[in-house]
Amino acid sequence: MRKLIAWNVMTLDGVFEGAGPWQLDMHQTIWGDEVEKFSLEQGAEIGTLLFGRRTYEGMRDYWTNEEGPVADMMNGIEKAVTSRTLETADWNNSRLLKGEAADTVRALKQEDGRDVFVFGSADLLATLMAEDLLDEYRICLAPVVWGEGTPLFKPRGGRMHFTLRESRPLETGGLILFYDRKNG
Image (cartoon, rainbow, N blue to C red; front, side, top):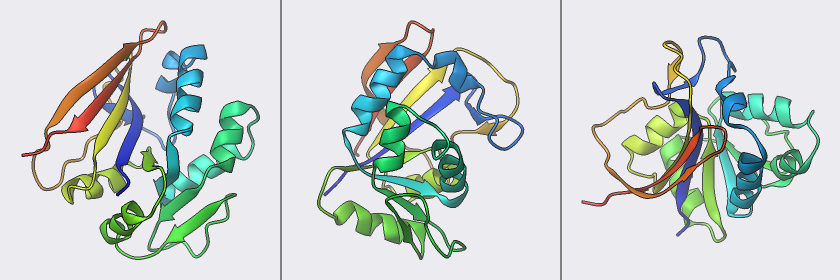
C-alpha cells in the first residue's frame, strides 16, 4: 500500500494562506537553492500528486505558466484531483477522482507505485486526517508570523499524534519537519 504524505509551508502561527485566496507570500521567505533541491528530491518520491479542487485549479494556473526544473516536475508528474464539482481534469497528466474524498483516496493508496503526496489542500487534508488516512506530514515552517489567514490544521474528528523523524534547518531561517503518524 502506498503512503499518503502531506507537504505544506506554514507560518510560525500556523497560517498556510493569507487573508486572501492564494496569498502565499510566506513561500518567498523560505525559497532558495535548498528548497528547490528539496522540491526536486521530493518530486522523485511522488507517484501521484493529489489535490482538492481549489488547490488543483490554482496550482494548474500557476505552474503551466512557469519554466524551470520545478515547473517541469509539477507539470509532468501524475496528478489527481478529488472533486464533486469538476467535470474534467485538464492539467497535463491529471485525472479526476469523483465521489467522496476519503473513499477515492483509500482506493488511490491501494494502487501500485510510489507514494501519494498532497500539496496545499487544507480542507481535503482535514477530511483525510479525520479518516485516519494520513501517514506522514512534511511541514516547512516559514520564519514569519502573520496574525491572520487560513490555518493549516482544521481538525475534524479529534486529535492525531505524530512523531518527529527528522528536521532540516534552512539557510533562509525556515525549518523542514518530517512527522510520521504515531500509531496507537
